[in-house]
Image (cartoon, rainbow, N blue to C red; front, side, top):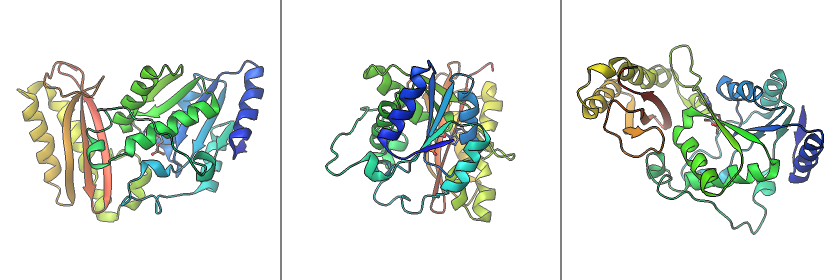
Length: 282
Ligand code: AMP
């Protein structure tokens, strides 16, 4: 597996592959890789010839009081994991490579970036779309893979690509969970033993709502049910529980449509997100 550190490294690598008619796939990550990240790569290999991961803890998507400095980093461990699934190259730039002195340009998808996680994380999605578009341009990838765990992020990237005529195939990949249901996340490493046990309430509340969907009379009943289940866990502090249309994240009410329950909940200082798609008659 090649380790590419600069834009020129990536350009040379990709140009060489494209000359041979190879289709490129990209999995953007912030590292501290777990099986959720690796599943994106396994899926990607079905759709491309050459697979590139990027590992970059992107400073522009962290707020001033967020966890940029303490975000888990383990490049050696990540390299081994990526080699083990047959990744061809990893792009591992420094901040100076991505944002050289004098950097000024940001990409923002209006409205969609201000709701849900964007309400408490101002500028977060602007950082995400900016870095993702840069990665698309640097790698000239043909397709890119994202987890449904970050459901809003995928909706925003899809909108950006549509609005800006970015000709890349985007693939959403199902959430990979621990055996007890907790969605895998690099941030799970922050949880202490009690918080880790408590965090299972997120997937439990969502699964329960999916299982009971045919018995709810309206979406308010569904939202109250999910909220009450989470509140039964004393260590959980709800930021939001929302019911939205799965395609564009606008407010939803009809239980017969394909909608998504999204939530963000804090356990101590750790903020976790999760979601599940629901539809009556499933
Ligand atoms: P991150 O490194 O957290 O920015 O995540 C990189 C990519 O991996 C994003 O597209 C995430 O949605 C995806 N991802 C993270 N956790 C999971 C998971 N548990 N299941 C599926 N995809 C995931």
